Length: 547
Image (cartoon, rainbow, N blue to C red; front, side, top):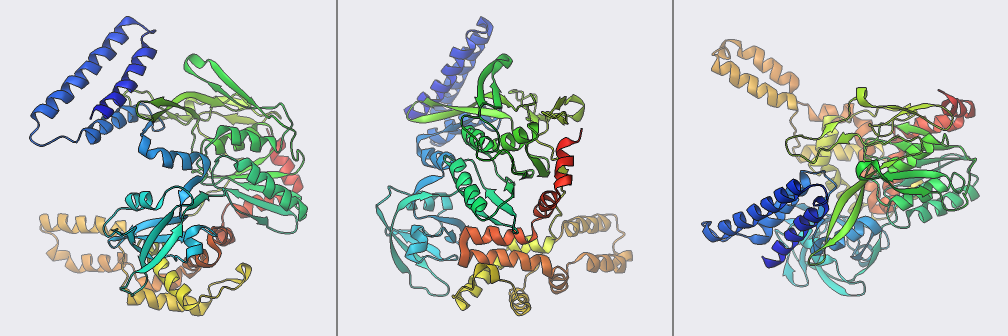
């Protein structure tokens, strides 16, 4: 308890130190409320009917305080340092696998290629039964993950249950330094257009992008698509370095401004570029945030790239990390960043006041800015693409097949029946395989409910309450039949969509993350418009020269 109280005191007193310069009234209010918190907690621990878990209660208090400011200001306790390091570096010591919870066990979802889990022979679907002799049944993924992680070079004994075999299989796995390459996939889309997919901005990601770029150029690449869709961002310096690949040395990429709009830092491209002429398209979507928006926004402001996709998330806040007691850290918003046109892309206004909830910046309050060539762009709403693409929503049956793990289970069964892989470029879901899947779904007696059905049940209950149901029962029965999904019919109707999802799911067994990405691109809605822009040089120039 002393440890936690010292941590929260450090956070509060650091606030006191900062705020003291504002005015004495604010200093008094901070001191007063800190005293209230301390005495309140003391009375709680003295008089509550059960023993109070000090760490749980005070950590909740810390997190509640920080949540009232913005979602990005967070407390990172010492025990979460490994996860924080992974977020920033992409590295950790462990076995290298994605895991999830299912039916009382944590299972292997995906072993990473050439990582310890894969090299030891673990497969998707394996249930983790014991780790170093400790029973893992009923344990949550976070608990299992903590047991699997450790110092590289150390050994961990993992016993798994596979398929219907009730006898655990033992694997002695040597942990390694697990590095997740943020470039999951790159390749040539045709004889001249290259493609690089970047998943996040971890330490060194710009080097990986550069390696991929140079390899593609050696294969004859004449234009490039850089895919930042669903990329949540990361390290600011890496974003600057990626922009630097395509623009000259000394160009301002981003400026950070803190309290009172005071300029804190100006980030310029530090090196000679790799290629300032190659036609470039950046793909973004609503999940592209932070560093992704810096890259897309800066290259848009410089008229160096055409942006294709959806409007981005709109995170223009900068965080710094500061130490607190007992090896914890406070990650706190310190500034906003501004891209070359002078605009800030932050889309949500946070007041730091519980009585004033965060609100989206309305269009009426956004301002116009201009790119280097005079095109009009706006602040306050992320990055609006030059060519907007509205993705189509998948059908309900596809979502429910995925959520109910039927795609995963069939892929697992398929792999065990077909362990030998064909070349990745030749892999496909044949009609016979899809027929097997339809039979598999039928045997599992799969059903799902639409939101319309839930609303219908409420309507039926209301009709019964109003005593009009019985006289109109035939009408209600007809309506119910009309809105109840016919699974087998929908499996036929949406065969193309479901086959594609099945292709992606099965591919990870043979070709790992690279294969999943490759298969995903076969029906990527953003890729087609991006390629069309690059296939038409006149259209590319027209977009960049429009005003």
